[in-house]
Amino acid sequence: MDESGASSLLLKEGAWLIADAHYAHYNTALYEFLSKLGPDDLPPQLLLMGDIFDLLFGYAQNSIQPNRKMVDLLQQIARQCEVIYLEGNHDFGLEPFFGEAIRVVPRSAQPLIGTFGAQRIALHHGDLLQGIGYELYTAVIRNRHVDRLLNMVDTARKGAVIDWLERYNRKKRPCYRIDHFEERMKKRLETLMKRYDFDVWIEGHFHQNLRFDHAGKGYFNLPAFACAQTYTVIRSFEGTIGFEERGVAQKA
Image (cartoon, rainbow, N blue to C red; front, side, top):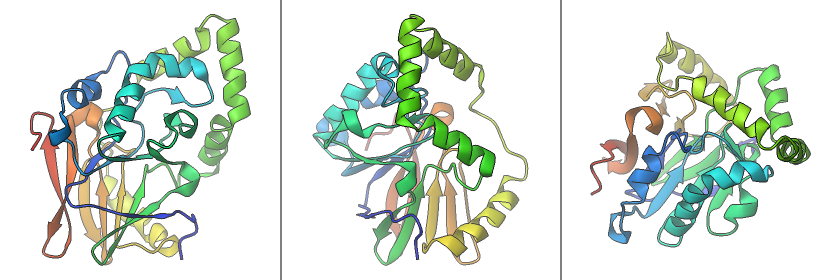
């Protein structure tokens, strides 16, 4: 049984998966890609797998304005195709301003269980099973009262808090390889199998772009758009879910 209580989703052939774009005014690759797409270029379903923004907290208004252009574009796209947004650790509290246009899935409702044919596909941003310290941290930063206090302090300090967070994020290097990642994820997958009922687990967060099968289950760590500038298209392969990696120059 799934412990998350997440609702289900019917995954569509041709759906796009985009993870870890880390959009900001200093990293506009995703905006440049999506803004050039016409209605006929869009997929039947767009799944945003978290950390689409580098810094966006829904209850901290001062983090919204620098991202307004991208927010408006996603809302426009949502009027033309189905958009599902799984919140990440860089972007959360999004439902108030995305409203009904985009289906927002908070961390507490992940994994989102999608069905593709007879398969159950678990979708998660990926920031779980990282220890009690991380759980305490992520609970604090997702608290709306903490975010509102952050916003008040930032306003009083004329944007100093958001500027500091932005400088901190810009020092990070999103494109990296994790040593022994497959071995570590196989052990992690065994824990996930005890907690959730799924056939394939799909997540972002780690930026590794790796697929493998283990103990009868499939695992896919999605490519980080910020690094590879690629996205993943869901395909049917001999009755099971398959994946096609596609670069930003390939729209059809």
